[in-house]
Length: 77
Image (cartoon, rainbow, N blue to C red; front, side, top):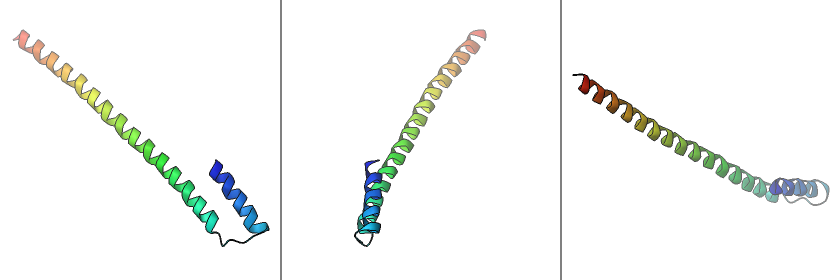
């Protein structure tokens, strides 16, 4: 949010008083985009970690179910 306020401030200064060529504004926009990209990548990595955990838990449940059925079938024989 602070970077967005800075962008608004520098655009106001550039339009009203002092032309800087847009360098300061573009640098702030790039900084804002890198922060957003880092947040997006962090969310994606968390989703991948959650998927791997659920897959691991599902595999344990499946293993227990198969072994239980296998043992009951052996006992029936």
